[in-house]
Length: 296
Image (cartoon, rainbow, N blue to C red; front, side, top):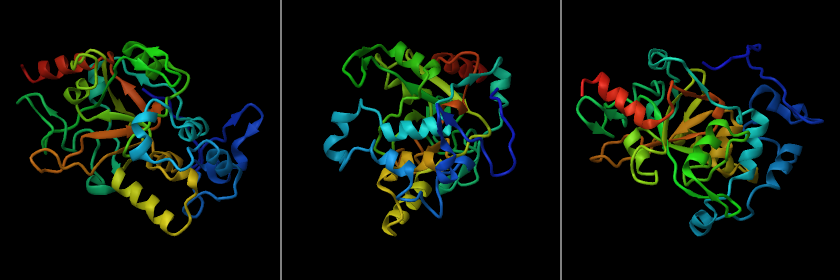
């Protein structure tokens, strides 16, 4: 399981990188860079992040061209918040299944448990997926062969290794905010692998201490601050804003794609250190295990 270091209520450690003390970044030291709704526009932190943001970035025009480039501002937030920490694993399936679930903050699933109470998972007993009432049991993500930001080839297995053991958590890009996109069930993740199967896909849970928000709540708060002129340019992305607010992950809770019934189909992971694997990280193993439990 993950290791938790206890601090007084409302406080988190001040992180140092070399000789650069993050304590001069306002409320970074208390785990939330936001002061009175947002960070000060003339703060050292905002200037540092702003220098890393694509100026005038337009998703519709540039997203697919730049998809393999990571969000350097989000990467900096990861670094300062400690979100680059590596995942952990548990020793048994029973321990994995008995883990307490994080509770979602806000949106249509406010107050509901992430794993178990939210529709959109896979019904192993009846062989169905993505329907209201099917519990999510864990997240899954598929990996494909591709290239890195410099155009160098990257094998799917190397991308998995980087996610699990790399020193840095890659700050990806996406249309619902930047971060690491994951599916609510293994079959969906399989569609993002080399051969549309479970080879190259991984499955995991989030630690019970994870702060999990909703896209609708976080994006609404971000847009409100923007309209009020309180949002720095550096945080005009839902993923960056969520990470800055201390969210470890958020679910995309605006999907209405399965028989016109609203179920989430994906989530965005920000804090890699909250990821928990069972004895095997391979998504194919979880499918076999779940079908076995269902007597199939």
